[in-house]
Image: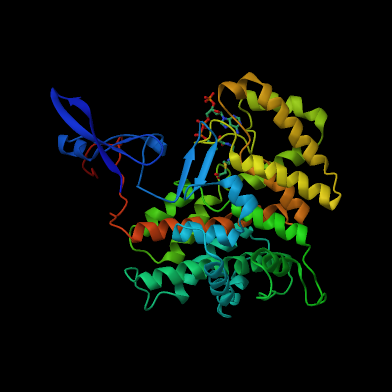
Amino acid sequence: MSAATGKKAVLELDGKKIELPIYSGTLGPDVIDVKDVLASGHFTFDPGFMATASCESKITFIDGDKGVLLHRGYPIAQLATQASYLETCYLLLSGELPTAEQKTDFENKVRNHTMVHDQVSRFFNGFRRDAHPMAVMCGVVGALSAFYHNGFDVENVDHREITAVRLVAKIPTLAAWTYKYTIGQPFVYPRNDLSYAENFLYMMFATPADRDYKVNPILAKAMDRIFTLHADHEQNASTSTVRLAGSTGANPYACIAAGIAALWGPAHGGANEAVLKMLDEIGSVENVAPFMEKVKTKEVKLMGFGHRVYKNFDPRAKVMKETCDEVLSALGINDPQLALAMELERIALSDPYFIERKLYPNVDFYSGIILKAIGIPTEMFTVIFALARTVGWISHWLEMHSGAYKIGRPRQLYTGETQRDIKR
Ligand code: CMC
């Protein structure tokens, strides 16, 4: 629980003073509780939630000025290099890193749920085969709600917990099948002798014609790290969407589909796809300077740069760049797009336009280059983000449902017509 500081903010309205309590968390700015403003007949106004804490949470902390990201207190760089993705999932869901026994138990639970009901496979056929994979993901993940609705009780802790395990387990299967569907290959069923990341790559790239397909361990390690780097990011647009949808008591699979929809946009998870498209368009290092001029005249945005919260290096981008270097050198790949990205970064970090606005590379700036090296096509990049972020979304949904919460219902500043009569 947050602690009342005893301090109060005083708001003077129409000559009356309203005292607003101030609470402290364990880290980060104190918050002013503005509920009592309502009694004065006013709403607070903060489009884009620039200064609004929408909930209390114990899962993830970000200090955007210092470039800090902690999950349950652990720095992201330590988790990415010293813990597996499934350990990070356990941490996000339960609050602690697992013991060896808890780790084995959790991995087994996830393994037991990697299959989807075979009827789910038929949903794919309803989509055009050139549909964007994120469109397919919104549909098939939302469709899971039809399989787990009757008998589901949101008040039941066991029901909530098994939902979280099912989602973490099934999302790689649905993501890989989405890819297979769009390229016209048969679905590959999960293999439970493989690790989480290996199994995902196996379902993506194995075919019935290549029964001995072996996942490259370098790629599996990189994939696992990419998953960890995307696992959660406190109250971002998609997580807030999942919380808002969840606050109505809606089916959790439908809530996750809502999160996937919110993630798709280029200002959020869709940026990783947009970065590679941008690098393709720029083409070569000579074109970087003219491109940057267009950015500064606001004709285009430098995708993979800037963040609502980070006004310093995104700590995920640092680990992502190191992983990118490791993967490309281990695979002996000399990707000209990496040189292009580095030149963009070099110019941006020394240009007053970016310095003044505190624009730094974010997690998406380098992830696309690694994903490309792994063999993931550009259109699937945001699906990878969605796969990895599912645990974050469901952790926030669990947290919300394990305490007291109210339906999320913002108000508005109405600027439309005043009441009028129909005249005929
Ligand atoms: N390229 C050029 N200018 C930018 C960029 C950019 N990528 N990002 C922000 N700016 C400028 C913006 O034009 C504005 O300038 P001015 O003050 O002159 O009007 C100033 O910087 C502040 O930007 P803002 O749009 O008010 O900032 P925001 O907090 O509302 O937006 C953002 C944050 C992430 C949507 C934005 O930086 C952006 O669109 N970045 C590119 C897309 C991107 O990489 N998104 C991935 C975010 S990280 C992954 C995730 O968590 O989803």
